[in-house]
Length: 118
Image (cartoon, rainbow, N blue to C red; front, side, top):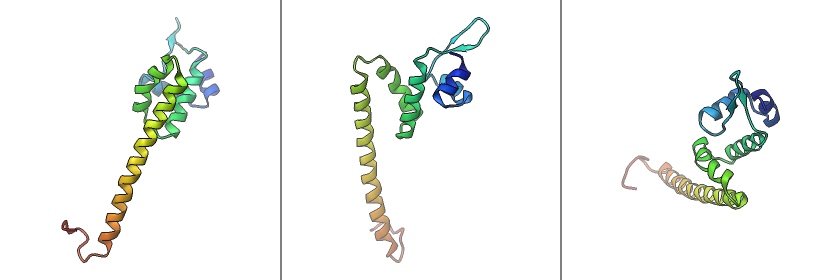
């Protein structure tokens, strides 16, 4: 499948696909005339990348995990573990932000809010 076909099938732009390829997230074979040729299962991989981005994964995180998931004997379990790890990270960050919010609220009532002795 050519880049235009993949772009249409996966609802992303050609530039996005080129960027993903440049980052090593997807790969294409080059035909004799230099055109990119993608296997049909690349549509599923591009959908995975876009979904992972929407769920808060960075392209770096996706790049680090995509090969392992793609080659895993149990991809569902591998994805479930990734999601659990991300959820744990988000919950920890939310707790940190809650503590920061509380400290900021305390400081708002102080004469000098940036006094380190609080």
